Image (cartoon, rainbow, N blue to C red; front, side, top):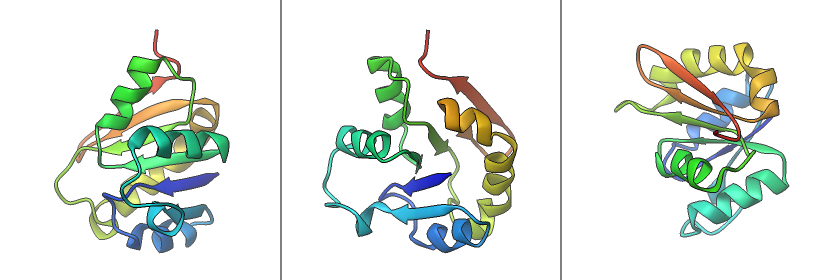
Length: 121
């Protein structure tokens, strides 16, 4: 599973995810930091990556376009550093790997996670 970290997440996530065996890249090492969310989504889908973000716009893009991918994990919490959320995100990635590979939006906060299968109906 390959994970693309959005600009609004720390590059520290790359190492945290790689230590668990996943391929992870921060957008800053791939493309222009001013690239639109739509372009990031297109790149992720073309390159078989899951988008990991703190930006709710990615979920909106999936809903308005009725896209079947890429999968998106969006965090909705104030402390978005791996030291705080790392164990939770890794657990979610492991538990829902098959679902993410098929196409899903997973929204995560401090207490719960919600999964929606793509495309939205």
